[in-house]
Image (cartoon, rainbow, N blue to C red; front, side, top):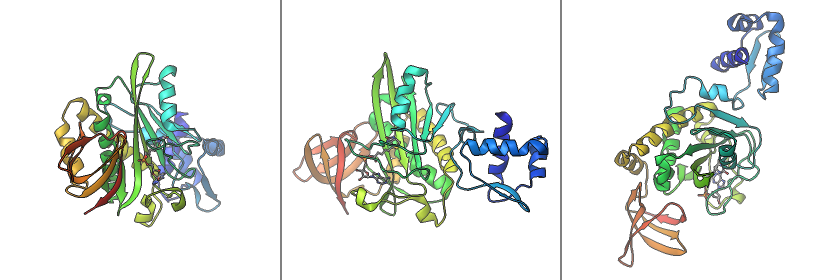
Length: 324
Ligand code: BT5
């Protein structure tokens, strides 16, 4: 396995370039006669390889998600010590919760190439074609961060926005409570869920990012987009995921240390909703007013048209409309 990971790493790091089979064998310390067997094993793991007699071999980009490529050299403190990638699941959030009873460790990261039953908040669906985008869940067990659903939700959105900038150089905006937008269209969503499982408090931070494909417009109720559309070329998901895990790790450590002001400042700086007039459906009521703030503990702070000042929690709230 180690040797196979090494070959995968060599091919990945060469980008669009080819390796001659002799050069690859020498770099990996493999007998040239055995190389075909290793390449076949990579194919069986789901990687697509391009082999030509004159130029040699290269990985077809963007590559299939692989735990080794995601984990290697990642300097996280709290999460991603263990990464699992699945071809098809019902929901990566469910896999993360189910893992608690099977010895799943705190910080476990679950990725799926496809979700049969991907979910959004409040019974809505998350739509995503196979093999193109990022469907990721992080499991936190008995974490102090799980005490604040609110803070975790906004931290995850901020981490996505930062990761898109780190990995792709694109600026994005945050829309409370859980959306990341590129030029006003939804590119990513966050779903934080909490459950008690055999006397443990489990929190799962679920994140969906449209990397290389957008959902059919007929299936979503707001404009949607993907990163590749804005870059003008496909995006390597592995790089976005690595950047995301590094950023999310930092914010989870920050929340656990109770340093919420920094989270607050960074979030508000990327959110275009301050002082805008919005309509929010929350707890069965409709609230209309101007946005005063987004608090990491209390949610959206709204100065309502009827003179009330309300705090609306992320869980159970939906932004209905937003005007400047
Ligand atoms: C969200 O819900 O935005 C949370 C999405 C979380 C998805 C991740 S994927 C990994 C993990 N496993 C899961 O099962 N879920 C998480 P919400 O704010 O309720 O937004 C849902 C709405 O966004 C839908 O009703 C659609 O209108 C729209 N939508 C669905 N799929 C979309 C997509 N791929 N891109 C943009 N908009 C989408």
